[in-house]
Image 1 (cartoon, helix red, strand yellow):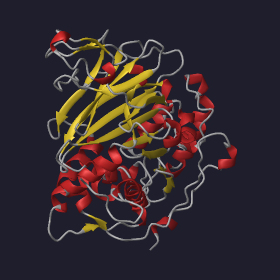
Image 2: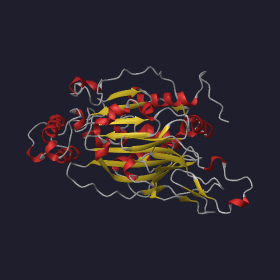
Image 3: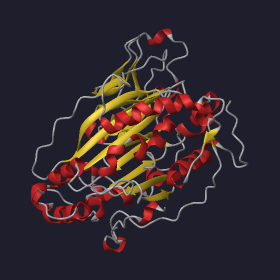
Image 4: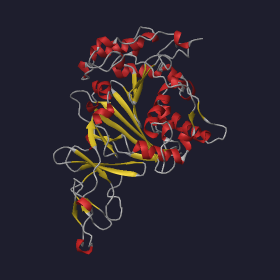
Amino acid sequence: MDIKRKIDVIRVNPEDWPNGTPAGKIPDPELGYDLIPVERYTSDAFMKLEWDHMWTKVWLLGGRSDDMPNPGDYICTEIGKESVLIVRQEDGSVRAFPNVCLHRGNRLRPEGLGNAENFRCMYHHWTYDRAGCITRIPDLDTFPQGAPPEGKLPSYPCGEWGSFVWYSLNPDVEPLETYLDPMQQHLGPYHFERMALVRDVTVEWDCNWKAAVDAFSETYHVQGIHPQLQWYLDDVNIQIDCVGKHSRYLVPFAAISPRVAVPSSIPPAIYDIMVKAGMDPAEYEGRVTDIRRDVQLFKRKHGAAQGRDYSELNDDQLTDDYHYTIFPNVSLNVHADDVMMFRMRPHATDPDKMLYDVWVFELVPDGEPWPDRVKHRHFKHGERSIGQVLDQDAYNLPTVQKGMHADSFKGLWIGDQELRIRHFHKVIDDYVYGPNGKPRDAG
């Protein structure tokens, strides 16, 4: 039985919002059906190839611009073996530097947020200004060779887009706007700058960073790992699009999966969607299968009065999950009223470990005060819950990683519902592999 024939999801007509998020289906690339070699997830050698030819070449998400509004505000973030300082300058621009003293290699700041007039190494008090220039070397006359060349920290490319700050370890990286294209057009209508951070968590996971990206790149696993979501979203009638380096899928929310029977009453999760929209589920007289469309109509009618500007969003965006992956390691569940953003970071030395950042943003209605910034929390997997759905992924992924080390497992057997995973590996190939199709020299 072709399960896609069981329901007919009403989708928006892209022509009705010509200047908004592109909603039309993008033709699928021809990527074949070969195994994706398991060594990509388990091998130290491939991990080094990724570092040398991908991580050090791409643009990376550094943090939220709101966290550094004033001169001297900084974000210290880590990627693999590197630590990076991103600093707001006197003219309002941002600059990025290696977070390492040029004297003996000491870290200048711990990971996190702060404000500084200067950056003084706690070891020997070498001091750098906000622009990375050395301003003091104690007992400089005892260094016959003088100060280090140029007298300042190296500078990394750095820029801002979408209320976020981005950086690259590659001094010759392409412009940020070129790298992100066409995400600006796709995500701009949501106006992330109107959303406040309400959750900031880092979890240490025992899996390769790509296994986590994979987990958020397909809905095929909903029936297995997240069965409760089948009464909340349609995991079958989704639209998958590969967009340059990046990708997305569009998932109908406030809908029932065709894999299960339509319930006679409103499921709790859909009930909550109605309440958050301002509807009274007790007064609703329609069918469960009509709720998605009726929520869209209600939000379109009442959004402005609630201080919520949906004018640039199409009707589907008022309910559905437009899920994007910005290559290589940013995953976004984007909704009209909130965004769940995940950043997957590789471990410095171990392909079986990673850091998983969870950032949740909520739309602040016009006229309401901006909430205080939440405190960042960092812990290991299993020490505390990160929510039912994410816990289900978190507890599954270590067993996936362990299984990948079996001698009998040769690679990932990817189907059409997992097209984004295959596309993801194709983009990795574009960085890691040379023009002749053979791996670059890892040395």
